Amino acid sequence: LIYADKKNKIPAHDLKFYTFYGEVGCVNEIARDPDLAYWWYTPNGEDIDLGIKNSDQAVPIGVKAEYVEIATELSKKIPAPHMRIDFLVGEDGIFLSEFCSQTGSQVETIIEVVSETWDRKFGNLYLKAEMNLINDLLQGKKFDEINEFNEICEKKYRQNRQK
Image (cartoon, rainbow, N blue to C red; front, side, top):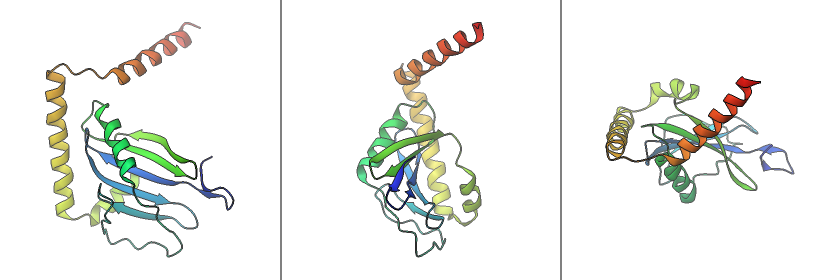
């Protein structure tokens, strides 16, 4: 269990990075205690106002440039135009939580209030990422980390299947 505050048993905040093959489009921060709250940021850490009013008790931690850099570097190693990369931020630092190829359930609810400008921005980021990925593949880019992971999974799967 990762705590934001072990003494008071406050769970870590989620930071969800919406990445586009080496570029962060935006960041969503989620707090679950004392109340559920959502904040949205540009990659520079500036607030994006989606018109959602959060509890006054919930306090955001914000986005550090080093977190954006980690998400950016990770997304360059994934052969997909879009990947949401999630972290938990606790007292002891930042921890990888998950990779998700879809936006997530809360975004479908929020998408109704997203401005046309942000909708277009995400569409353009996706198209640019797709083009960059195709160009890298055509130039022979190897995704060594993904290939190594797949080899480990394949060996494990084969071992379990043979038993």
